[in-house]
Amino acid sequence: MDIFIQQLINGLTTGSVYAVVALGYTMVYGVIQLINFAHGEVVMIGAMVAFSVIVSLAGSGLPPLAIVACGIIAAIPSCMIIGYFLERVAYRPLRHAPRLAPLITAIGMSIILQHLALLVWGRNPIAFPQIIDNPSFAIGGASITGVQIAIILLCFAMMAALTWFVFRTKFGIAIRATAEDVRVAGLMGINANAVIAATFVIGAALGAIAGVMFGTYYGIVHYTMGFILGLKAFCAAVLGGIGNIAGAMVGGILLGLVEAMATGYIGEITDLCRWPGGGTSFLVERCADGGNFVLFGSNYQDVFAFLVLILVLVFRPSGLLGERVAERA
Amino acid sequence: MAQALIEVLNLEVRYGGIAAVRGVSFAVEPGEMVCVIGANGAGKTSTLKALARMIPSSGEIHYDHLRVEKMLSHELISKGLALVPEGRGVFARLTIRENLLMGAYHRNDTADIDADLDKIFVMLPRLKEREKQLAGTLSGGEQQMLAIGRAIMGRPKLLLLDEPSMGLAPIMVEKIFEVIKGVAAQGVTVLLVEQNAKLALEICSRGYVMENGRITVADTSANLLADSRVRAAYLGE
Ligand SMILES: Nc1ncnc2c1ncn2[C@@H]1O[C@H](COP(=O)(O)OP(=O)(O)OP(=O)(O)O)[C@@H](O)[C@H]1O
Ligand SMILES: [Mg+2]
Image (cartoon, rainbow over all chains, first blue to last red):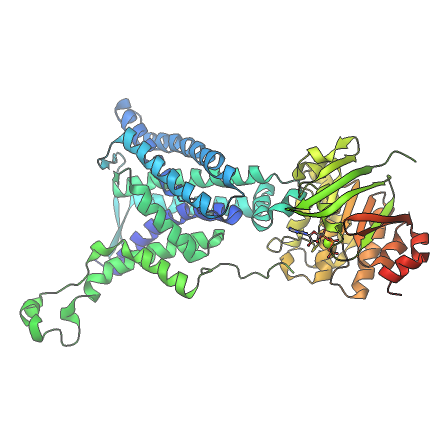
């Protein structure tokens, strides 16, 4: 098996999910400079709602794809309502408060949503029903599954749709105008509250679909899954340049790839037996006959996203695509 | 006196403990072109921001049978009240065309919007050439043109302009003032705030002088241009 190509495929899959989740962070940040830390939990709720719908329809005799589609269709409005509710109840009253206040509320909301999920779906990891066939296709010494193909295609379709919406429609342009200057946007007749609510609702809808894809891909959902997924997507948004829509997409995919590559190769790279002089000293016995002495294994997977975050914050805080345009004269 | 298009009564603006506008009253009739002149910090911008509901104020603002002080900023443009803010406020990361379309955000008459876009591009040919360029790449003068064009796209009845000459070379200022005159000639009522008192008084029929948050003189432009105090304080003589 070709590790490189395999990890490319795996990275592209998780990366495109990160990208879609990252869009939710970046759109909200772009307009009100708030990091909606509860966004990861919205994604989790999307996965959970879809889980419940899929399980309850499993015996209904509907075709499996239709059942999964029902799961997604139920998850989307549920998440949109939560997104709207978050903005309305938790953030809007604090719009003009010091920046720290809504940040703390965001964390509070995230805890509340987690515990709501805990009450409804319990504290144990739940196996996400794998009801659709998942054929595997050979490709360049590696393999890609039907689910991976579906996830990648769906994510790219969503990104294309969002790009079209934000750059080609009147309301999309109004979102960008509001992101740049709320007061002047108001002079144009743009209702800032409507725009802000829309960014939450759109981000939540994308997040719902991402949640279902994530559940389908890993086959497991848990009430805390939104935390790490959200945090990684947030890293992706920062990597691309938070507030920048194209940046979130690039950052998400890049982060998925970095994570997959690092996970794929970390064992080899940190195998002391492969290092110069590895066969000598105290390692001799371990390394004999193709043995190894691996410092870090692929269970370090979750570290890389944060490593990337730290590197970006140190070397390029504005992110890859952040703020290169001439500022207001 | 005919029915005023906008009548301001006893307007006050405070920033914390500081009163920036202290009981200002004035009126502009339909079709008039009126200016407010005054030194830095006189309260001109604060007055316009209050009219456009960008900041809270007390006092009454009557505009076209509406009580503006009870309205929200984004409700005004559909009633025909537009402000070109100080410092232009163009959306730097939007293209020129997108900026202009945002000016027409409240309108739904797509065909007429396209026609108005064409008119603006005839009036401001420099913008036409750069239609798809980001507004942030324009020069200061071009941005001012864009800001005015964008306001016109909203088909205002009353256009408030806050120091359109700010930071521009004299030749550019003249061009901008030509554009403003052209807009007024089409029947738009104009309230112009300016530090460039001479130019402002030359194109407006009346003027108000604002000092320390109060209107201290109100007269025709001809009289203001002849007034020795005004000449000394604002015309550099
Ligand atoms: N956001 C603010 N917070 C506190 N004080 C302010 C604020 N904006 C304006 N002021 C003060 O209010 C007073 C009037 O300011 P304003 O901007 O209305 O004056 P202006 O006549 O437009 O001046 P300029 O010609 O320099 O633009 C000034 O003393 C100014 O310092
Ligand atoms: Mg001013």
